[in-house]
Length: 251
Image 1 (tube, rainbow, N blue to C red):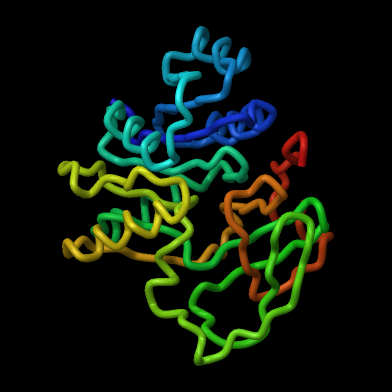
Image 2 (spheres, rainbow, N blue to C red):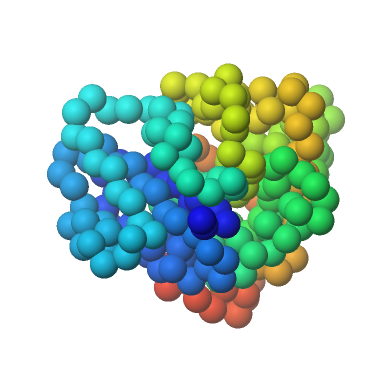
């Protein structure tokens, strides 16, 4: 029985899969990796990986384009582990990421853990930054594709405590026992709808900072949403903080 089931919904991004596979393979806990891909053609890389590693299960369907929420639900249903971890196909997860997050989750007897602060990088603009979701005011940088804009957060903006809970790329949670707590069949804001239902149920959710450089959130023209950075970081720190990050082809 694996300790955690890593789930990755994807579509039309086969070029990213070898890089995220390296992140999965480097994790120091017992894992299984479930990938759902509804690209027109299956990934030859994933098919070959499944043939050699029984911990990897690859689901391909070339029919109707399913939503991200639908694919997450399918993978959760197939998961064997008591914990579910989101690994997006275009982010970097350091080798210590899962071990540290699961340890903190268990120490706090939490039902879900996520990052409230995280590093991010936009290859198109070479912007390296750090986001603090707890910062409700002050100068921020809005990243969308290859553009970077300055924006001033102020106290009249509708940024409440629940803002910390969004951004599901770093979710790790107990496998839902009730189908009502699964994701809505949508591809935008499915993380928000999921977390609201979980919090409303009384589940214990904790959000932590990333002081050990465990995850690098990538922002690029093919990202499903834009992102913000609270701080800009010197580019020379990127390889020092994330020595295992080798880039994602195509970004």
